Image 1 (tube, helix red, strand yellow):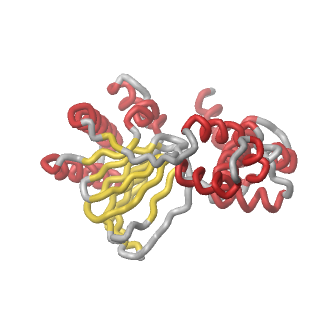
Image 2 (cartoon, rainbow, N blue to C red):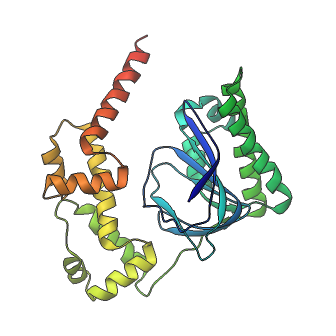
Length: 293
């Protein structure tokens, strides 16, 4: 059961602190926002792209936009964490001060940092101050939050550069990383054809069972899961950038039935392909209206 300690939202930012004591495994997902997770206490396992992290009290994880990630229960299930989601384009002042776009900053410093014990209280307080400003929304809160985001980024930059605590654990198998990369590229290049595991194994002269086991060990994904995620990502691009019908997009991304397309798309994005397209069209129209003012 999830216990909410605090929760707040504003245009371009959301923050919450919650505690869990029961087993909870989040589905792999991705989003355009930058994400920060800070663990006040407890333990939690974290997967981002193909890296695995094991968080504990004082661990801060930065997730770059569109990174496929999820958290899952370790043997010790209790954890107390603060979650921060940031839309980079809503904080251009912070980007200007840092000398680079916030998205670029998160791409550079993504991963887990174990905050030194003497600085954990400062990080915790900084995140709590952001939450207070978001929740109370007093005069000038947007500007104050922008300043605190700059402070958080600079603090993380100093800690990582000084202590080199940007860490991850990457598994490896007997098949070379080069061969696994070739298999991943082959899957991404043949999304419409949707090659079976048997076909992939034959293509790369590998036993099918062995391929499934090692691919999961090296990447953190099953072959089907990896394929579906990139098929959905490509479908998102087509929904945003073209006027193709849903049925046509489903075919181009290897979904033979529109019902199955809807089900898999909803699994990873929590919305239907049609609703996703409508939201993106509405957003683009609102941007055009602002630019024409």
